[in-house]
Image (cartoon, rainbow, N blue to C red; front, side, top):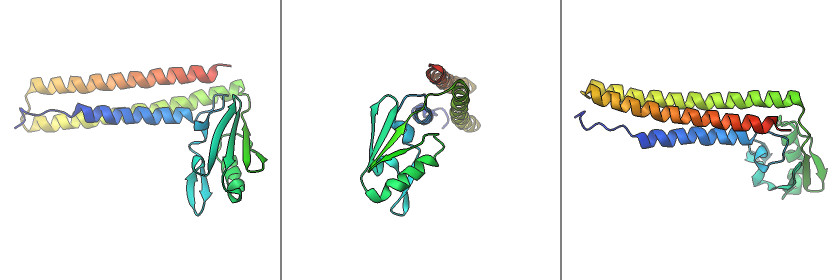
Length: 187
C-alpha cells in the first residue's frame, strides 16, 4: 500500500512556479524610474458599475522611457481613470489631453529608491513564505504516507527531494530580489 507511494513533485513544482510568477508580477508593479505598462496592472477603475483593470478601458502605451499614456476608449471614463491613478498610491500625477491621459514618470530620489528596495524585499519574503508553506504540504504528505507504512529509506528520499526543490526555489527568489534591487538602485 505505502510501498507504491510517490509524491507529486510536478504539482509542488507547478505551485512553486506560481509563487515565482506572482513575485515577478509584484516586482513589475514597482516603479524603477523607467516607464512600463505593467506598473498600471494593479490599478482598477470603477467602470460601468464594476472594478475593471485599466488595460480594459483604454490602450496603454509607453511612447518614451519616462512617459506612459492611456488612450481611454470611452470619454465618460476619462475622469474615473484619472481618479483611479491618483488614488492608486503609485505617486504619479496624471495629465489630461482630451481622451489621452499622460503619466510622466518622475526621477526617483535616493530615499525613494531605498523604500522601493524594502518593498521588493517584502514581496520576496512573501514568496519565500509561500514556497515554505508548499514544502510543509509536501512533508505532511510524506508523514501521512509514513503512518500508512512507508519505509524510512523512502521517507528520507522524498524529504530530500522536497527540500532540494524548496532550496532551488528559495535561491530563485533571492536571485530575482537581487536583480530587482540592483535595477531600483541604478540611477
